[in-house]
Length: 315
Length: 315
Image 1: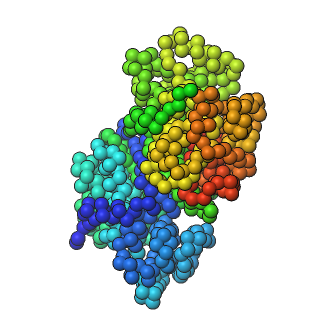
Image 2: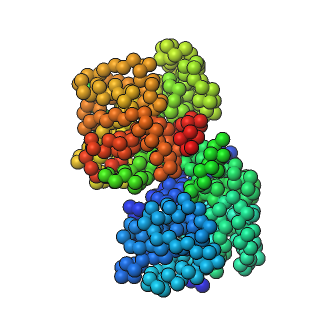
Image 3: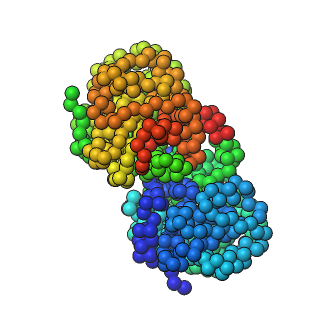
């Protein structure tokens, strides 16, 4: 299987300029064993790293193809990112969502100019491909595409520039696009650094797959148990091949550790983080003994948290 | 009176590397007339731009002088910044605070390694100078010093690099150090840009002074009425001379406008802003008709908000 290279990522970077934010590293000095830095991707437009992959994938399309529009299926941060980028390019975006999606997410996708199509959960992907063929539009998958992976990898280029002597990089894993991209960049630019994926214990299918050396499938209802609602997807063949190649290992964190890290991150970074965005920091804070010591970067993947949960965390 | 120059600010910048954050510009796209960008200084260590001035002022001291330590008098963000920077240099910091200071602020200053001395409000400055002379330490004033002003000015250098065609820069004014520094940098690097200070209507002494052409004093109890607790100081002769030289004008905002801007900033930037940090954005959002149109940067000066107020704002 063809893996992306750091050249694909440096190439992606040019497509991000002026729209994606070059997020800083924020020091969270209270951890004693390692020096912990947060890469706050919650500061991106739409509040998540997903803007990077969407910008690269849509930006790379030949102009006549791009003009026919794009289709995504997701109810989360990827959908918002595709709608946002399509608006920047002035092209149509159609987002297929399960009919159980909260109104607020549908409204915010519409506010970005996306056309929302609600379908029963089971028909989501088939309806998306039907729209692709009807509209002549291009599907933009959330992680299973080399251009999306290369876009997410720009996070890793930035880490390598901002902290060249980084020792440990911790990345949340769901579909695996973010960890595949960052891992590829950091492996190339900081070969001494150790790179770990992090999952909730309750959605640890990628950790199980890496141990087994082949993709292990967990039932969606099992993966749905974690509070980290952005980490309920599972790797594809493409991302799994990247994860095997670039990760030094996987760590898993409990729900309690995710909640504690979430509270600490919000207080110390003064940014609003979502549960999925806190798992990498939770690994540093609560599983330091399983990690090498040194300068540690934890990627905070997003900040779209339910307002009720946010108030509960702040109490 | 000798004003600082952009060379003082480029010189200051080298002292900030690795400790102060090069904060990104965050787009807040919902404003129709102007394109609004936020410069989120709430992402700095200690949650405010004050780290920049403290780093420059303490970093510039000759080594034997610095080793004898520093003294600051403040109960707010400047005190935290001086304690933080002193710890980075491994030197003692003594912070003189009024005996009415909330325990939580005293505890957080102590957690940074600062020695806290509580005195009656009226004796604050005299006790600070007594300590300076007893300890042989150096006083680090919150704004009335060229090295502090030059440090704060590094915000302006970053804005000029990040958005070279910026049209309007909006900066909160309290003692005036931040606006003096940023104004000097932006005037030199983006001579076409218009630069405005912003104050709460309830603490608009600097606006009154600029209109009168001389320092107008408001009673402390009047300045204390605004929710923007970081904007209750008044300019010194030094900062007033800078403000007269670099500002195109001043705007004032109401308490209701500050609250509305605060809520919008927290929701849209996904960062935690304090009331003082929202006044510049409030000027853009509610006083656009008094401003030139175009690419507008509003400086969010800090993020140390009372947790009760934050929960109220999020409700």
